Length: 140
Image (cartoon, rainbow, N blue to C red; front, top):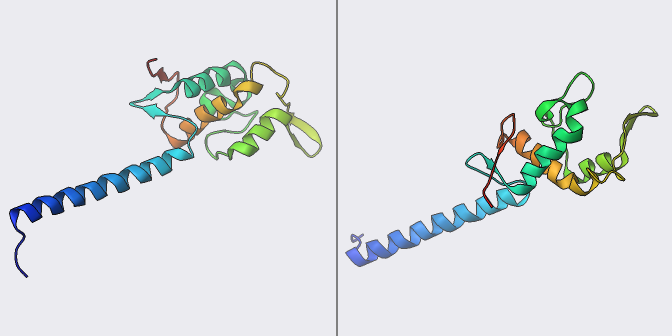
Protein backbone atom coordinates (compact mmCIF):
# COMPACT_ATOMS: atom_id res chain seq x y z
CA UNK A 1 0.00 0.00 0.00
CA UNK A 2 1.46 3.31 -1.00
CA UNK A 3 1.32 6.28 1.42
CA UNK A 4 -1.15 9.14 0.94
CA UNK A 5 0.03 12.06 -1.12
CA UNK A 6 -0.29 15.48 0.65
CA UNK A 7 -3.37 16.49 -1.38
CA UNK A 8 -5.03 13.11 -0.81
CA UNK A 9 -4.33 13.39 2.91
CA UNK A 10 -5.93 16.85 3.05
CA UNK A 11 -9.01 15.66 1.12
CA UNK A 12 -9.33 12.56 3.31
CA UNK A 13 -9.11 14.71 6.47
CA UNK A 14 -11.75 17.16 5.19
CA UNK A 15 -14.17 14.36 4.26
CA UNK A 16 -13.64 12.53 7.57
CA UNK A 17 -14.19 15.72 9.60
CA UNK A 18 -17.28 16.53 7.54
CA UNK A 19 -18.77 13.11 8.31
CA UNK A 20 -18.10 13.53 12.02
CA UNK A 21 -19.71 16.99 12.07
CA UNK A 22 -22.76 15.88 10.08
CA UNK A 23 -23.32 12.73 12.14
CA UNK A 24 -22.85 14.67 15.38
CA UNK A 25 -25.31 17.35 14.31
CA UNK A 26 -28.01 14.89 13.29
CA UNK A 27 -27.78 12.97 16.57
CA UNK A 28 -28.02 16.24 18.52
CA UNK A 29 -31.01 17.33 16.46
CA UNK A 30 -32.67 13.96 17.00
CA UNK A 31 -32.05 14.13 20.74
CA UNK A 32 -33.42 17.67 20.92
CA UNK A 33 -36.45 16.96 18.70
CA UNK A 34 -38.42 15.31 21.50
CA UNK A 35 -37.57 17.98 24.05
CA UNK A 36 -39.99 20.77 24.83
CA UNK A 37 -37.30 22.90 26.45
CA UNK A 38 -34.09 24.57 25.43
CA UNK A 39 -31.45 25.26 28.04
CA UNK A 40 -28.10 26.69 27.05
CA UNK A 41 -25.37 27.42 29.59
CA UNK A 42 -27.91 26.98 32.39
CA UNK A 43 -30.30 29.55 30.89
CA UNK A 44 -33.86 28.56 30.00
CA UNK A 45 -35.72 29.61 26.88
CA UNK A 46 -38.90 31.70 27.24
CA UNK A 47 -41.26 28.68 27.20
CA UNK A 48 -39.36 26.85 29.92
CA UNK A 49 -39.00 29.96 32.04
CA UNK A 50 -42.72 30.63 31.73
CA UNK A 51 -43.33 27.00 32.71
CA UNK A 52 -41.31 27.60 35.87
CA UNK A 53 -43.44 30.64 36.69
CA UNK A 54 -46.73 28.85 36.01
CA UNK A 55 -45.65 25.76 37.93
CA UNK A 56 -44.72 27.80 41.00
CA UNK A 57 -47.91 29.81 40.66
CA UNK A 58 -50.18 26.83 41.17
CA UNK A 59 -48.62 23.37 41.02
CA UNK A 60 -45.92 23.65 43.67
CA UNK A 61 -48.48 23.88 46.47
CA UNK A 62 -49.15 20.16 46.04
CA UNK A 63 -46.24 18.79 44.00
CA UNK A 64 -43.55 20.58 45.99
CA UNK A 65 -40.91 23.08 45.02
CA UNK A 66 -39.26 22.35 41.68
CA UNK A 67 -41.48 19.33 41.02
CA UNK A 68 -39.80 17.09 43.59
CA UNK A 69 -43.05 15.98 45.21
CA UNK A 70 -44.44 16.27 48.72
CA UNK A 71 -46.31 14.20 51.26
CA UNK A 72 -49.48 15.32 49.49
CA UNK A 73 -48.64 14.75 45.80
CA UNK A 74 -46.11 12.81 43.74
CA UNK A 75 -42.88 14.02 42.21
CA UNK A 76 -43.21 15.18 38.64
CA UNK A 77 -39.49 14.86 37.90
CA UNK A 78 -38.55 11.43 39.27
CA UNK A 79 -40.68 9.48 36.79
CA UNK A 80 -41.69 11.84 33.98
CA UNK A 81 -44.74 10.99 31.90
CA UNK A 82 -45.29 11.59 28.20
CA UNK A 83 -46.78 14.87 27.02
CA UNK A 84 -50.18 13.47 26.03
CA UNK A 85 -50.72 11.89 29.46
CA UNK A 86 -49.55 15.10 31.14
CA UNK A 87 -51.95 17.22 29.08
CA UNK A 88 -54.86 14.91 29.85
CA UNK A 89 -54.20 14.86 33.59
CA UNK A 90 -53.75 18.62 33.86
CA UNK A 91 -56.86 19.32 31.76
CA UNK A 92 -59.17 16.63 33.18
CA UNK A 93 -57.72 15.95 36.61
CA UNK A 94 -56.73 12.63 38.14
CA UNK A 95 -58.80 10.30 40.28
CA UNK A 96 -57.95 7.23 42.29
CA UNK A 97 -60.52 4.65 43.35
CA UNK A 98 -63.36 7.01 42.46
CA UNK A 99 -62.18 9.94 44.57
CA UNK A 100 -60.67 13.04 43.01
CA UNK A 101 -56.96 13.34 43.69
CA UNK A 102 -56.29 16.32 41.47
CA UNK A 103 -58.82 18.67 39.96
CA UNK A 104 -58.66 19.50 36.28
CA UNK A 105 -57.47 22.88 35.02
CA UNK A 106 -59.09 22.85 31.56
CA UNK A 107 -61.05 26.03 32.31
CA UNK A 108 -58.35 27.86 34.25
CA UNK A 109 -56.89 30.66 32.09
CA UNK A 110 -53.76 30.74 34.25
CA UNK A 111 -52.85 27.14 33.41
CA UNK A 112 -54.79 25.66 30.48
CA UNK A 113 -52.98 27.67 27.77
CA UNK A 114 -49.60 26.97 29.37
CA UNK A 115 -49.64 23.20 29.89
CA UNK A 116 -46.82 22.65 27.39
CA UNK A 117 -44.73 25.37 29.07
CA UNK A 118 -45.14 23.67 32.44
CA UNK A 119 -44.21 20.36 30.82
CA UNK A 120 -41.10 21.96 29.30
CA UNK A 121 -39.98 23.15 32.73
CA UNK A 122 -40.62 19.75 34.35
CA UNK A 123 -38.92 17.91 31.49
CA UNK A 124 -35.83 20.12 31.88
CA UNK A 125 -35.83 19.42 35.62
CA UNK A 126 -36.25 15.66 35.06
CA UNK A 127 -33.40 15.59 32.53
CA UNK A 128 -31.11 17.52 34.87
CA UNK A 129 -30.85 20.42 32.42
CA UNK A 130 -32.17 22.76 35.14
CA UNK A 131 -31.42 22.61 38.81
CA UNK A 132 -33.64 23.65 41.68
CA UNK A 133 -34.65 27.26 42.11
CA UNK A 134 -35.48 30.04 39.67
CA UNK A 135 -33.72 29.42 36.35
CA UNK A 136 -31.84 32.14 34.57
CA UNK A 137 -33.57 33.29 31.41
CA UNK A 138 -32.03 33.51 27.96
CA UNK A 139 -31.83 37.01 26.56
CA UNK A 140 -34.40 38.30 24.08
